[in-house]
Length: 315
View (cartoon, rainbow, N blue to C red):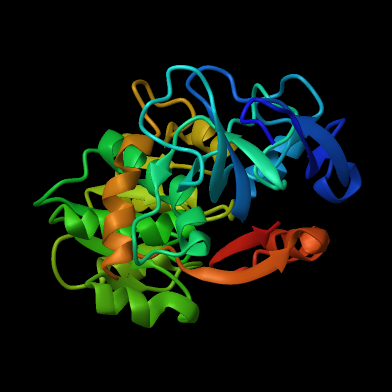
């Protein structure tokens, strides 16, 4: 087919807002040739995130219908004007343009707004798991000021963003305290983090840990009512940032990455972490993969908060 032709694609999308299981459907649509500074790819793997279900419920409301799947990897099949750094046939990954298109990454074809070549040694499944976890964790740590000499508590280090944030913080030379369950505790300790359980009694457990107490806290856990305890640990709500519990953040004076002044989602660093992942020096854990047709099972696993790693759709 010509590079400029439109293609028919299966896609998972919603036509109205509501609970994901009620509004999402797998259907066919048309993906047009990419606009300027965009590329289109044949999707090999698509990462799913809690943000996908939040979109269904009205987060960043906009034109409908709208697709899910905010990150993907695949083979470039068409390039827009002013694109000079990638060619048709190249394996790339990155965040999907879900705003100006009526489909997203949970499709056979998708439009990328940023892209990074997949380096040798990294497969498309692990590449598709990187964009949201890396870019959100990196930008949030930047805004908090995590650097060498600081002690940061990552609440929810067993989430994909949390697991990435632990590795990025350690790479910056910070001391890391991580809250996590049994699934990831040993792996986080092996990375160099001090690990404690999450849940009731967290301030007392953190206070009993040897070494410096945390002066910065990043909350990456699902909404669980943990923010008051994190504020107690920090002794200042402005030393705490959440990427999930936005309502409690407003009430407590905690910073949120959605409203943080100057907050950047750092897609520009994806090449760095793709190279590290290809060398076995960085990882976003993969929990399970699913065929595109089995998206309802993936939704059920994700909504049950029992994924224990990234869920990946394979169109």
